[in-house]
Amino acid sequence: MKNYTSVHDVADIQALVNEALELKKSPYAHKELGVNKTLGLIFLNPSLRTRLSTQKAAINLGMNVMVMNMDKEGWALETQDGVVMDGATVEHIKDAAAVMGQYCDIIGLRSFPKLQNREEDYNEEILNKFIEYAGVPILSLESATRHPLQSLADLITIQEHTPAGKRPKVVLTWAPHIKPIPQCVANSFAEWMSMADVDLVITHPKGYELAPEFTEGTTIEHDQDKALEGADFVYVKNWSSYEQYGKVLSDGKGWMMTNEKLSLTNDAKVMHCLPVRRGLELSHEILDGPNSLVVKEAANRLYAAQAVLKRQLEGLK
Ligand code: CP
Image 1 (cartoon, rainbow, N blue to C red):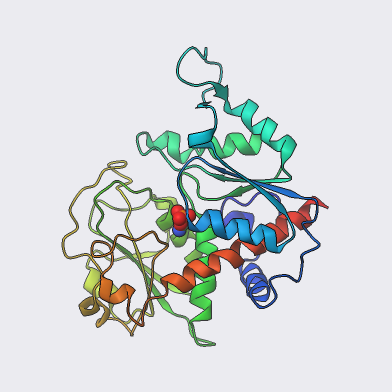
Image 2 (cartoon, helix red, strand yellow):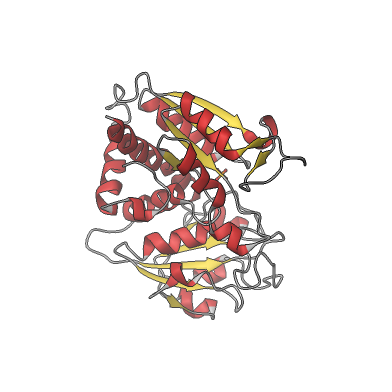
C-alpha cells in the first residue's frame, strides 16, 4: 500500500481488519519493520485519539515519530498556485511538503475542511498537494471529506461485537451539535459500511443529506425511531449540511440518543468516534452504561493505524 486516504486504497477490507486483529493479539510482532524509518505526523487541526494512537502504532512497529502542529508551530501555508505571496501566508504548501518528504519515510496528515467552500473542500486540496509534492506515502489522519483510520477502527469494533455468521443492522444517526461539524466521519463510515457485511441505515433530519457518492444504495430513513428498530449497532455523529454547505440547520431537539431510544433497538451497542458532547449528542446514561463501545472503539484506533502503517512500511521495500 502506498497512500491511505480512503477505503479505495484498500484492496481487501476484510484482510485489513483481520491483520489489525492479529496485531491486537501480538502488537510487537513486527518491531523490526520500522527500524530506521521515520513517520512525520503533521496536524493542521487538534487531535487526541488520532495523534496518540498513530504515534503508538508507529512505536509498536519500531518507527521513529516526529510530530508537528503545523497550525501553531509552522509557517502559514499558501495553497493556491501561481499567486504573489504578498499577504499573510509565508510558505507554499508545495515547498513545505517537499521538504517534509526529505525528513520522513511516511507522512501522516490531518487537514479539516474549512466548511466555507464545498468545491474547495471536496477537492481535497491540501491532502492532494501533499500527495503530489511530498514524494513519500501519505497517511490520512482525517481530511476534508474522510476519516479512514476512524472507519477502519469502527469496522474492527463492529466485527468484534458481532456473533459469527450474523449480518448486523447498523444505523448511522445524526445527532445535535452547537457548531458546524465536518461530514468526514459520516461520509467515511457510510463508505466503509457499504462495502462491509452489514445492513446500513442512515437517519437524519431533512436537509442533512450527505454527498450522494457516499450514500449511493444506502437506505435513508428520516424517522429516527423507525430507523432504530432492531438495530444491532447505533453510530452517533453530528455533521453540518452538505446541501447548504457547512450550515447548522436546526437545534436537533429530540435527536439525542437516550436509553428510551435504545429500547427501540436490538439492545444495540452504541458507538461514537469521540470527542463527544455529553448530554447534547449522546446521553450520559448511554455513555456510562453497558451498551457504550466508545472506549473500545477508541482503543481499536491503535490497531487500525498499526495495520495500515505496516502495509505502508512493507510497500517501501
Ligand atoms: N476520533 C478522532 O479522530 O479523535 P481526535 O480528533 O481526538 O483525533
